[in-house]
Length: 208
Length: 208
DNA sequence: GTCTATATAATGATAGAC
DNA sequence: GTCTATCATTATATAGAC
Image 1 (cartoon, chains in turn green, cyan, red, yellow):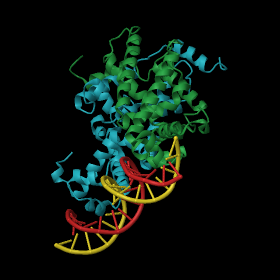
Image 2: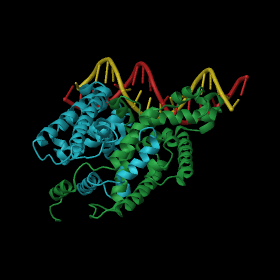
Image 3: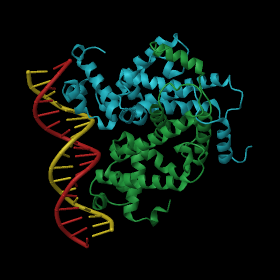
Image 4: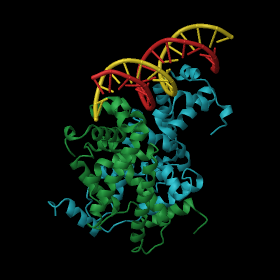
Protein backbone atom coordinates (compact mmCIF):
# COMPACT_ATOMS: atom_id res chain seq x y z
CA UNK A 1 0.00 0.00 0.00
CA UNK A 2 1.23 3.49 -0.86
CA UNK A 3 2.59 6.10 1.50
CA UNK A 4 -0.33 7.88 3.18
CA UNK A 5 1.21 11.19 2.22
CA UNK A 6 0.82 10.31 -1.45
CA UNK A 7 -2.91 9.67 -1.18
CA UNK A 8 -5.63 12.23 -1.69
CA UNK A 9 -7.54 13.24 1.41
CA UNK A 10 -10.51 11.26 0.18
CA UNK A 11 -8.42 8.11 -0.13
CA UNK A 12 -6.82 8.67 3.27
CA UNK A 13 -10.25 8.96 4.85
CA UNK A 14 -11.31 5.73 3.15
CA UNK A 15 -8.19 3.96 4.39
CA UNK A 16 -8.65 5.23 7.93
CA UNK A 17 -12.29 4.17 7.96
CA UNK A 18 -11.32 0.75 6.62
CA UNK A 19 -8.81 0.35 9.42
CA UNK A 20 -11.09 1.51 12.22
CA UNK A 21 -14.18 -0.35 11.06
CA UNK A 22 -12.05 -3.49 10.97
CA UNK A 23 -10.38 -2.78 14.30
CA UNK A 24 -13.17 -1.59 16.56
CA UNK A 25 -16.34 -2.03 14.49
CA UNK A 26 -18.71 0.42 12.88
CA UNK A 27 -20.38 1.65 16.06
CA UNK A 28 -17.24 2.40 18.05
CA UNK A 29 -15.44 4.09 15.16
CA UNK A 30 -16.53 7.72 15.20
CA UNK A 31 -16.42 10.29 12.43
CA UNK A 32 -14.05 12.30 14.57
CA UNK A 33 -11.65 9.43 15.21
CA UNK A 34 -11.57 8.49 11.53
CA UNK A 35 -10.97 12.07 10.48
CA UNK A 36 -8.19 12.38 13.05
CA UNK A 37 -6.44 9.25 11.79
CA UNK A 38 -6.72 10.52 8.22
CA UNK A 39 -5.32 13.88 9.30
CA UNK A 40 -8.35 15.88 8.17
CA UNK A 41 -11.26 17.68 9.78
CA UNK A 42 -14.64 16.00 10.44
CA UNK A 43 -16.14 18.55 8.09
CA UNK A 44 -14.08 17.32 5.17
CA UNK A 45 -15.17 13.78 5.80
CA UNK A 46 -18.75 14.87 5.49
CA UNK A 47 -17.92 16.89 2.39
CA UNK A 48 -16.60 13.81 0.65
CA UNK A 49 -18.94 11.10 1.89
CA UNK A 50 -22.04 12.83 3.23
CA UNK A 51 -22.70 10.61 6.23
CA UNK A 52 -21.17 7.83 8.28
CA UNK A 53 -23.45 5.28 6.66
CA UNK A 54 -22.50 6.49 3.19
CA UNK A 55 -18.84 6.26 4.18
CA UNK A 56 -19.39 2.65 5.16
CA UNK A 57 -21.02 1.97 1.80
CA UNK A 58 -18.05 3.51 0.01
CA UNK A 59 -15.57 1.42 1.99
CA UNK A 60 -17.69 -1.69 1.40
CA UNK A 61 -17.63 -1.10 -2.34
CA UNK A 62 -13.89 -0.51 -2.27
CA UNK A 63 -13.18 -3.66 -0.28
CA UNK A 64 -15.48 -5.79 -2.43
CA UNK A 65 -13.68 -4.54 -5.53
CA UNK A 66 -10.27 -5.33 -4.11
CA UNK A 67 -11.33 -8.80 -3.00
CA UNK A 68 -12.83 -9.54 -6.39
CA UNK A 69 -9.72 -8.30 -8.12
CA UNK A 70 -7.40 -10.44 -5.99
CA UNK A 71 -9.71 -13.36 -6.64
CA UNK A 72 -9.64 -12.86 -10.40
CA UNK A 73 -5.87 -12.47 -10.44
CA UNK A 74 -5.47 -15.81 -8.73
CA UNK A 75 -8.35 -17.66 -10.35
CA UNK A 76 -6.10 -19.02 -13.06
CA UNK A 77 -3.48 -20.07 -10.54
CA UNK A 78 -3.20 -23.27 -8.55
CA UNK A 79 -6.43 -25.10 -7.79
CA UNK A 80 -4.95 -26.75 -4.74
CA UNK A 81 -7.31 -25.61 -2.06
CA UNK A 82 -10.42 -23.72 -1.15
CA UNK A 83 -11.23 -20.04 -1.30
CA UNK A 84 -8.86 -19.24 1.54
CA UNK A 85 -5.85 -20.98 0.04
CA UNK A 86 -6.43 -20.72 -3.71
CA UNK A 87 -6.36 -16.95 -3.82
CA UNK A 88 -3.43 -14.78 -2.91
CA UNK A 89 -3.42 -14.78 0.87
CA UNK A 90 -1.18 -11.74 1.08
CA UNK A 91 -3.43 -9.66 -1.16
CA UNK A 92 -6.52 -10.44 0.87
CA UNK A 93 -5.05 -10.19 4.33
CA UNK A 94 -5.73 -6.46 4.82
CA UNK A 95 -9.40 -7.02 4.02
CA UNK A 96 -10.06 -10.20 5.96
CA UNK A 97 -10.77 -8.49 9.24
CA UNK A 98 -12.86 -5.78 7.63
CA UNK A 99 -14.93 -8.35 5.84
CA UNK A 100 -15.44 -10.47 8.94
CA UNK A 101 -16.37 -7.46 11.08
CA UNK A 102 -18.82 -6.25 8.49
CA UNK A 103 -20.70 -9.50 8.89
CA UNK A 104 -21.33 -8.59 12.52
CA UNK A 105 -21.94 -4.90 11.97
CA UNK A 106 -24.87 -5.52 9.66
CA UNK A 107 -23.41 -4.43 6.35
CA UNK A 108 -25.83 -5.58 3.63
CA UNK A 109 -23.18 -5.63 0.89
CA UNK A 110 -20.99 -7.96 2.88
CA UNK A 111 -23.84 -10.29 3.76
CA UNK A 112 -24.33 -10.97 0.06
CA UNK A 113 -20.65 -11.78 -0.29
CA UNK A 114 -20.90 -14.26 2.57
CA UNK A 115 -23.50 -16.18 0.63
CA UNK A 116 -21.22 -16.28 -2.40
CA UNK A 117 -18.25 -17.55 -0.41
CA UNK A 118 -20.45 -20.15 1.25
CA UNK A 119 -21.58 -21.29 -2.20
CA UNK A 120 -17.96 -21.58 -3.36
CA UNK A 121 -17.04 -23.57 -0.27
CA UNK A 122 -20.04 -25.82 -0.84
CA UNK A 123 -18.82 -26.60 -4.34
CA UNK A 124 -15.38 -27.34 -3.01
CA UNK A 125 -16.82 -29.74 -0.43
CA UNK A 126 -18.98 -31.38 -3.07
CA UNK A 127 -15.82 -32.07 -5.04
CA UNK A 128 -14.14 -33.53 -1.96
CA UNK A 129 -17.15 -35.77 -1.40
CA UNK A 130 -16.43 -37.45 -4.74
CA UNK A 131 -13.58 -39.35 -3.16
CA UNK A 132 -15.60 -40.41 -0.13
CA UNK A 133 -16.93 -43.91 0.24
CA UNK A 134 -19.25 -43.41 3.22
CA UNK A 135 -22.43 -41.37 3.30
CA UNK A 136 -21.97 -37.81 4.63
CA UNK A 137 -24.02 -37.00 7.75
CA UNK A 138 -25.28 -33.79 6.12
CA UNK A 139 -25.52 -32.24 2.65
CA UNK A 140 -22.76 -30.10 1.06
CA UNK A 141 -24.77 -26.99 1.69
CA UNK A 142 -24.76 -27.25 5.47
CA UNK A 143 -21.11 -28.15 5.69
CA UNK A 144 -20.14 -25.43 3.21
CA UNK A 145 -21.84 -22.73 5.23
CA UNK A 146 -20.38 -24.05 8.47
CA UNK A 147 -16.85 -24.22 7.12
CA UNK A 148 -17.20 -20.66 5.84
CA UNK A 149 -18.24 -19.40 9.26
CA UNK A 150 -15.47 -21.37 10.93
CA UNK A 151 -12.74 -20.00 8.69
CA UNK A 152 -14.03 -16.47 9.22
CA UNK A 153 -13.79 -17.03 12.97
CA UNK A 154 -10.01 -16.77 12.61
CA UNK A 155 -9.77 -13.14 11.41
CA UNK A 156 -12.66 -12.24 13.72
CA UNK A 157 -10.78 -13.46 16.77
CA UNK A 158 -7.30 -12.56 15.55
CA UNK A 159 -6.67 -10.50 18.65
CA UNK A 160 -7.21 -13.45 20.98
CA UNK A 161 -5.39 -15.85 18.69
CA UNK A 162 -2.39 -13.56 18.57
CA UNK A 163 -2.36 -13.28 22.34
CA UNK A 164 -2.61 -17.02 22.92
CA UNK A 165 -0.05 -17.89 20.24
CA UNK A 166 2.35 -15.11 21.21
CA UNK A 167 2.61 -13.88 17.62
CA UNK A 168 0.65 -11.38 15.56
CA UNK A 169 -1.21 -13.66 13.19
CA UNK A 170 -1.60 -10.74 10.77
CA UNK A 171 2.16 -10.54 10.37
CA UNK A 172 3.99 -12.53 7.71
CA UNK A 173 5.31 -15.00 10.26
CA UNK A 174 2.01 -15.40 12.04
CA UNK A 175 0.06 -15.81 8.84
CA UNK A 176 2.41 -18.53 7.62
CA UNK A 177 2.02 -20.38 10.90
CA UNK A 178 -1.77 -20.16 10.57
CA UNK A 179 -1.66 -21.31 6.95
CA UNK A 180 0.45 -24.29 7.97
CA UNK A 181 -1.91 -25.25 10.77
CA UNK A 182 -4.89 -24.92 8.44
CA UNK A 183 -3.29 -27.35 6.00
CA UNK A 184 -2.85 -29.81 8.82
CA UNK A 185 -6.40 -29.32 10.02
CA UNK A 186 -7.81 -29.73 6.52
CA UNK A 187 -5.90 -32.91 5.93
CA UNK A 188 -6.46 -34.72 9.24
CA UNK A 189 -9.45 -35.91 11.23
CA UNK A 190 -10.01 -35.20 14.91
CA UNK A 191 -12.28 -38.11 15.69
CA UNK A 192 -12.77 -41.48 14.07
CA UNK A 193 -15.82 -42.24 11.96
CA UNK A 194 -16.78 -44.81 14.60
CA UNK A 195 -16.79 -42.17 17.32
CA UNK A 196 -18.77 -39.82 15.09
CA UNK A 197 -21.30 -42.59 14.45
CA UNK A 198 -21.63 -43.17 18.21
CA UNK A 199 -22.29 -39.50 18.82
CA UNK A 200 -24.69 -39.34 15.90
CA UNK A 201 -26.67 -42.25 17.29
CA UNK A 202 -26.85 -40.51 20.65
CA UNK A 203 -28.10 -37.29 19.10
CA UNK A 204 -30.39 -38.87 16.53
CA UNK A 205 -31.56 -42.21 17.92
CA UNK A 206 -34.38 -42.63 15.36
CA UNK A 207 -32.22 -43.21 12.26
CA UNK A 208 -29.94 -46.23 12.63
CA UNK B 1 -35.48 -20.27 32.04
CA UNK B 2 -38.18 -18.99 34.38
CA UNK B 3 -41.06 -16.69 33.53
CA UNK B 4 -39.77 -13.09 33.38
CA UNK B 5 -42.62 -12.06 35.68
CA UNK B 6 -41.21 -14.31 38.39
CA UNK B 7 -37.80 -12.69 38.34
CA UNK B 8 -36.71 -9.76 40.45
CA UNK B 9 -36.11 -6.52 38.61
CA UNK B 10 -32.41 -6.98 39.07
CA UNK B 11 -32.52 -10.40 37.44
CA UNK B 12 -34.73 -9.12 34.61
CA UNK B 13 -32.22 -6.36 33.87
CA UNK B 14 -29.41 -8.91 33.84
CA UNK B 15 -31.34 -11.14 31.45
CA UNK B 16 -32.19 -8.24 29.15
CA UNK B 17 -28.56 -7.09 29.10
CA UNK B 18 -27.42 -10.64 28.37
CA UNK B 19 -29.79 -10.82 25.42
CA UNK B 20 -28.93 -7.43 23.97
CA UNK B 21 -25.17 -7.68 24.45
CA UNK B 22 -25.33 -11.01 22.62
CA UNK B 23 -27.65 -9.73 19.90
CA UNK B 24 -26.27 -6.32 19.00
CA UNK B 25 -23.05 -6.03 20.97
CA UNK B 26 -22.03 -3.90 23.93
CA UNK B 27 -21.80 -0.58 22.09
CA UNK B 28 -25.13 -0.72 20.33
CA UNK B 29 -27.04 -1.93 23.37
CA UNK B 30 -27.98 1.17 25.37
CA UNK B 31 -28.95 1.50 29.00
CA UNK B 32 -32.32 2.76 27.81
CA UNK B 33 -33.00 -0.18 25.51
CA UNK B 34 -31.96 -2.68 28.16
CA UNK B 35 -34.14 -1.01 30.79
CA UNK B 36 -37.04 -0.95 28.36
CA UNK B 37 -36.73 -4.66 27.61
CA UNK B 38 -36.55 -5.40 31.33
CA UNK B 39 -39.61 -3.24 31.92
CA UNK B 40 -37.90 -0.85 34.33
CA UNK B 41 -36.58 2.70 34.25
CA UNK B 42 -32.99 3.58 33.34
CA UNK B 43 -32.65 4.95 36.84
CA UNK B 44 -33.31 1.59 38.41
CA UNK B 45 -30.68 -0.01 36.24
CA UNK B 46 -28.16 2.43 37.58
CA UNK B 47 -29.40 1.87 41.12
CA UNK B 48 -28.65 -1.84 40.83
CA UNK B 49 -25.51 -1.88 38.72
CA UNK B 50 -23.99 1.60 38.89
CA UNK B 51 -22.80 1.89 35.29
CA UNK B 52 -23.00 0.21 31.93
CA UNK B 53 -19.50 -1.19 32.34
CA UNK B 54 -20.36 -2.56 35.79
CA UNK B 55 -23.49 -4.13 34.30
CA UNK B 56 -21.34 -5.86 31.74
CA UNK B 57 -19.06 -7.16 34.47
CA UNK B 58 -22.06 -8.53 36.34
CA UNK B 59 -23.41 -10.26 33.26
CA UNK B 60 -19.95 -11.61 32.49
CA UNK B 61 -19.68 -13.11 35.96
CA UNK B 62 -23.14 -14.62 35.66
CA UNK B 63 -22.43 -16.16 32.27
CA UNK B 64 -19.06 -17.51 33.35
CA UNK B 65 -20.69 -19.13 36.37
CA UNK B 66 -23.39 -20.75 34.26
CA UNK B 67 -20.89 -22.04 31.71
CA UNK B 68 -18.68 -23.45 34.42
CA UNK B 69 -21.66 -25.09 36.09
CA UNK B 70 -22.83 -26.71 32.86
CA UNK B 71 -19.28 -27.84 32.27
CA UNK B 72 -18.96 -29.41 35.70
CA UNK B 73 -22.32 -31.12 35.39
CA UNK B 74 -21.23 -32.79 32.18
CA UNK B 75 -17.58 -33.38 33.02
CA UNK B 76 -18.35 -36.84 34.34
CA UNK B 77 -20.44 -37.67 31.27
CA UNK B 78 -19.35 -39.06 27.94
CA UNK B 79 -15.82 -38.27 26.85
CA UNK B 80 -16.71 -38.63 23.21
CA UNK B 81 -15.73 -35.26 21.84
CA UNK B 82 -14.26 -31.86 22.50
CA UNK B 83 -15.46 -28.98 24.61
CA UNK B 84 -18.33 -28.26 22.27
CA UNK B 85 -19.70 -31.77 22.23
CA UNK B 86 -18.72 -33.15 25.62
CA UNK B 87 -20.74 -30.63 27.59
CA UNK B 88 -24.46 -30.20 27.48
CA UNK B 89 -25.08 -28.34 24.24
CA UNK B 90 -28.56 -27.30 25.27
CA UNK B 91 -27.42 -25.82 28.55
CA UNK B 92 -24.74 -23.74 26.89
CA UNK B 93 -26.66 -22.58 23.85
CA UNK B 94 -28.10 -19.39 25.44
CA UNK B 95 -24.60 -18.28 26.38
CA UNK B 96 -22.71 -19.18 23.22
CA UNK B 97 -23.52 -15.99 21.37
CA UNK B 98 -22.92 -13.83 24.43
CA UNK B 99 -19.55 -15.41 24.97
CA UNK B 100 -18.53 -15.08 21.34
CA UNK B 101 -19.67 -11.45 21.16
CA UNK B 102 -17.82 -10.63 24.33
CA UNK B 103 -14.61 -11.69 22.65
CA UNK B 104 -15.12 -8.92 20.10
CA UNK B 105 -16.43 -6.34 22.53
CA UNK B 106 -13.29 -6.38 24.61
CA UNK B 107 -14.54 -8.03 27.76
CA UNK B 108 -11.48 -8.91 29.87
CA UNK B 109 -13.24 -11.68 31.80
CA UNK B 110 -14.20 -13.45 28.61
CA UNK B 111 -10.73 -13.15 27.11
CA UNK B 112 -9.39 -15.20 30.01
CA UNK B 113 -12.02 -17.84 29.36
CA UNK B 114 -10.97 -18.02 25.71
CA UNK B 115 -7.48 -18.95 26.80
CA UNK B 116 -8.85 -21.71 28.99
CA UNK B 117 -11.01 -23.15 26.23
CA UNK B 118 -8.08 -22.99 23.83
CA UNK B 119 -6.01 -24.90 26.37
CA UNK B 120 -8.71 -27.56 26.68
CA UNK B 121 -8.93 -27.89 22.91
CA UNK B 122 -5.15 -28.16 22.73
CA UNK B 123 -5.22 -31.08 25.16
CA UNK B 124 -7.94 -32.72 23.11
CA UNK B 125 -5.87 -32.36 19.94
CA UNK B 126 -2.80 -33.67 21.70
CA UNK B 127 -4.79 -36.79 22.56
CA UNK B 128 -5.94 -37.13 18.95
CA UNK B 129 -2.31 -36.85 17.82
CA UNK B 130 -1.52 -40.04 19.73
CA UNK B 131 -3.17 -42.06 17.00
CA UNK B 132 -1.38 -40.24 14.18
CA UNK B 133 1.51 -41.79 12.33
CA UNK B 134 2.74 -38.74 10.40
CA UNK B 135 4.34 -35.64 11.84
CA UNK B 136 1.87 -32.73 12.40
CA UNK B 137 2.70 -29.56 10.46
CA UNK B 138 2.33 -27.49 13.64
CA UNK B 139 2.25 -28.00 17.40
CA UNK B 140 -0.91 -28.76 19.40
CA UNK B 141 -0.97 -25.25 20.71
CA UNK B 142 -1.43 -23.55 17.36
CA UNK B 143 -4.06 -25.97 16.16
CA UNK B 144 -5.91 -25.83 19.48
CA UNK B 145 -6.20 -22.07 19.37
CA UNK B 146 -7.23 -22.12 15.71
CA UNK B 147 -9.88 -24.76 16.25
CA UNK B 148 -11.26 -22.75 19.16
CA UNK B 149 -11.57 -19.63 17.02
CA UNK B 150 -13.12 -21.61 14.19
CA UNK B 151 -15.79 -23.20 16.37
CA UNK B 152 -16.64 -19.81 17.86
CA UNK B 153 -17.13 -18.47 14.36
CA UNK B 154 -20.38 -20.43 14.23
CA UNK B 155 -22.28 -18.64 17.02
CA UNK B 156 -20.68 -15.36 15.93
CA UNK B 157 -22.08 -15.66 12.43
CA UNK B 158 -25.28 -17.47 13.40
CA UNK B 159 -27.36 -14.82 11.67
CA UNK B 160 -25.73 -15.42 8.30
CA UNK B 161 -25.65 -19.17 8.79
CA UNK B 162 -29.35 -19.21 9.57
CA UNK B 163 -30.10 -17.16 6.49
CA UNK B 164 -28.02 -19.33 4.16
CA UNK B 165 -29.31 -22.60 5.62
CA UNK B 166 -32.90 -21.46 5.82
CA UNK B 167 -33.23 -22.52 9.45
CA UNK B 168 -32.56 -20.78 12.76
CA UNK B 169 -29.44 -22.56 13.93
CA UNK B 170 -30.26 -21.55 17.51
CA UNK B 171 -33.46 -23.56 17.39
CA UNK B 172 -33.56 -27.22 18.39
CA UNK B 173 -33.78 -28.37 14.79
CA UNK B 174 -31.06 -26.05 13.55
CA UNK B 175 -28.72 -26.90 16.39
CA UNK B 176 -29.10 -30.59 15.71
CA UNK B 177 -28.29 -30.05 12.06
CA UNK B 178 -25.19 -28.10 13.02
CA UNK B 179 -24.12 -30.73 15.51
CA UNK B 180 -24.49 -33.40 12.85
CA UNK B 181 -22.45 -31.45 10.33
CA UNK B 182 -19.75 -30.84 12.93
CA UNK B 183 -19.45 -34.56 13.58
CA UNK B 184 -18.97 -35.10 9.86
CA UNK B 185 -16.43 -32.29 9.63
CA UNK B 186 -14.50 -33.58 12.64
CA UNK B 187 -14.36 -37.10 11.26
CA UNK B 188 -13.44 -36.40 7.62
CA UNK B 189 -10.62 -34.66 5.78
CA UNK B 190 -11.08 -32.06 3.08
CA UNK B 191 -7.77 -32.49 1.31
CA UNK B 192 -5.37 -35.39 1.10
CA UNK B 193 -2.08 -35.36 2.99
CA UNK B 194 -0.35 -35.33 -0.41
CA UNK B 195 -2.13 -32.14 -1.41
CA UNK B 196 -1.35 -30.60 1.97
CA UNK B 197 2.30 -31.51 1.52
CA UNK B 198 2.34 -29.88 -1.92
CA UNK B 199 0.86 -26.68 -0.52
CA UNK B 200 3.26 -26.77 2.42
CA UNK B 201 6.22 -27.06 0.11
CA UNK B 202 4.95 -24.09 -1.87
CA UNK B 203 4.55 -21.96 1.25
CA UNK B 204 7.68 -23.17 3.03
CA UNK B 205 10.20 -24.18 0.37
CA UNK B 206 13.15 -24.28 2.77
CA UNK B 207 12.08 -27.33 4.83
CA UNK B 208 11.70 -30.44 2.68
C1' DG C 1 -36.78 -0.33 45.28
C1' DT C 2 -38.53 2.36 41.89
C1' DC C 3 -39.43 6.41 39.46
C1' DT C 4 -38.92 11.29 37.15
C1' DA C 5 -36.12 14.97 36.00
C1' DT C 6 -31.80 16.81 34.78
C1' DA C 7 -26.79 17.48 34.12
C1' DT C 8 -22.89 16.37 31.23
C1' DA C 9 -20.57 14.47 27.58
C1' DA C 10 -20.14 12.53 23.05
C1' DT C 11 -21.70 11.97 18.36
C1' DG C 12 -23.61 12.72 13.78
C1' DA C 13 -25.15 16.39 10.97
C1' DT C 14 -24.97 21.18 9.21
C1' DA C 15 -23.65 26.02 7.75
C1' DG C 16 -20.61 29.10 6.18
C1' DA C 17 -15.74 31.25 5.71
C1' DC C 18 -11.43 30.76 3.20
C1' DG D 1 -11.11 21.20 -1.08
C1' DT D 2 -10.51 22.23 3.44
C1' DC D 3 -11.40 24.25 7.70
C1' DT D 4 -13.86 26.17 12.15
C1' DA D 5 -17.89 26.76 14.62
C1' DT D 6 -22.28 25.20 15.96
C1' DC D 7 -26.71 22.64 16.23
C1' DA D 8 -29.57 18.69 17.36
C1' DT D 9 -29.67 14.27 19.08
C1' DT D 10 -28.57 10.71 21.88
C1' DA D 11 -26.04 8.44 25.57
C1' DT D 12 -24.39 7.96 30.17
C1' DA D 13 -24.30 9.56 34.63
C1' DT D 14 -26.43 11.88 38.66
C1' DA D 15 -29.80 13.83 42.12
C1' DG D 16 -33.64 13.62 44.56
C1' DA D 17 -38.81 12.52 45.30
C1' DC D 18 -41.96 8.75 46.48
